[in-house]
Image (tube, rainbow, N blue to C red; front, side, top):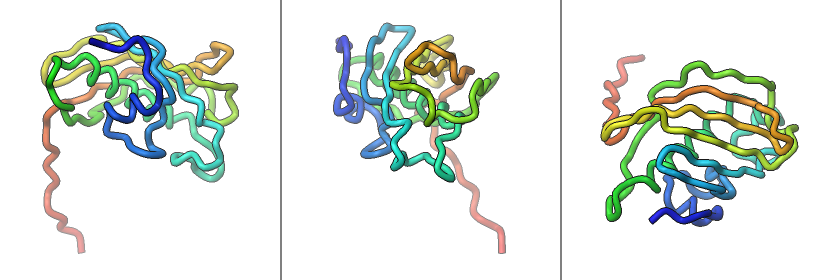
Length: 156
């Protein structure tokens, strides 16, 4: 049974992003097709993804990835453990702003499952600021249960 809402601790217990890398503060809603989450740490000077004192808009992909991971965990059959996965592609990503840290918060992260099977899922995602302004949107594909093969290093 999917909870109606989740706080940060409930999210952190369901996704592999621990400690400061768990960027979502709360889950606002979840259906079989869509999840909406909240994130309020984007203006924190100690944010783990800050680069040269700012949080680039491209970091929205990490917020969306975590929402997708949470959605997958909540929609998994009861008793199934977490299925490892990785972000395989991002398409049509539009950065409507240059940075996230100066956007009024909290941010709203929406991910909608467009297609899925046991091995992969494709999501559309959007990040909005507290006023409803669209900051970033796009599509992402996640592959599940696949071990990435890393070839041996042959560099000197």
